[in-house]
Image 1 (cartoon, rainbow, N blue to C red):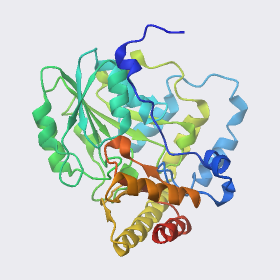
Image 2 (cartoon, helix red, strand yellow):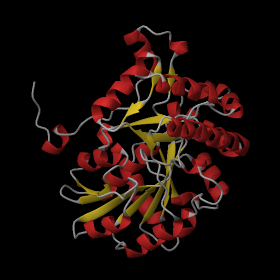
Image 3 (cartoon, one colour):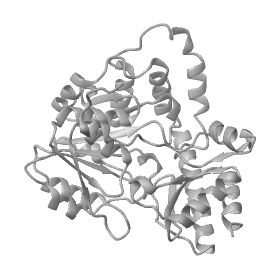
Image 4 (cartoon, helix red, strand yellow):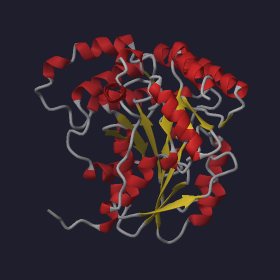
Length: 366
C-alpha cells in the first residue's frame, strides 16, 4: 500500500539510539547481567532513592489522566530557579520541547541553523516540519563556531539550535561568547539553547541563561531530567522562555504529554541536590579515569563537559572494528557516524567498575 507522504517526511532517517541491553543479550547470547551499557549518556547511579520512594507511592492513580498543565511540577521548577510558572512548558523528554519549538515557528521552506556535529534530533524535527537544515561548519575542536552560525542567517531563518554542552562532542561555549551571539541574532529568530547536561557542569561553568530571558525574548532554554536526574525511562523535560513564546508552544502541545509518575518523580528529584552532587562527582572521577586511559593508548578524544567522551579511531573501518570488539565482550558504546563523525565512537561515563571493563577491552583490542 502506498500513501501520499510529503517528500521531506519520506526522506527522513529514523533516530537510532544506543542499543538496549536485552537486544544485545538476545543477539550475542551474553548474560544481560554481564553487559555494560555506555551508549546513551544515562546516569549510572540510576535514580535518587528519594525519587524511587515517591514513584512507588504514586502508582495508585495511574488509571487517572495526569495533570495536563503540570501545575505542581511547574511550581517546583519556578521556585527552584526563580521563574514564573507561565515561562515553563513541560515535555515528554526535552526532545518533545525541541519538536514543539520547531512546530511552533516553522513553515515548509523555512531554514534552521545548527552545528554540523549536533544532536540528531535537531535535523529530524526540522525536516519533519518541512524546514531546511543549515549546518554550520564546526570549530577546530568539533564544537560550535558561532561566527559561522551568524553567516548562515538569511531572510528564511526562523530557528537556531545550540546545545551547551554539545552532544556528541561535549564542547562548552563560554557565557560571554553566547551573550555576544544572542545580541547579534535578529529578534524574530527563536534561539533554542539545549542544556540537557547542565547539571554536570562545575559551579563556574554552570549556565546562567535563565537570567537572560528578560532581555532576550527570542531565547528558549530546554532542560532534561533524563541525564543527571536519571529519569530517562520516564521521559520528562521542560522548556523555559518568554511567556508569549510558551503560550504559542502550548497551542501545539499534545494534551497530557507528560505522565503523572514522571511529574511526581521530577518534583522529588528537584529537591534532592545531594544526589545531583554525587552524580556530578562520580562523573568527574569517571571522566578523569577515561581520559587517562585514552592518553595511555594514544587515542585522541574531545574534551567533554558532559557525561560522555567521543574518541577518534582514525578511520571508519577501525572505529567499527573497535565497536564490534567491545560489543562482543559485552560493552555497548555508540558509533556516531550519523553525527558526521565516522571515525569516532562515543562512550558514556559509567561507574568506576564499568569504566574499568570498557578500558580493559579497549586496551586488549588488536
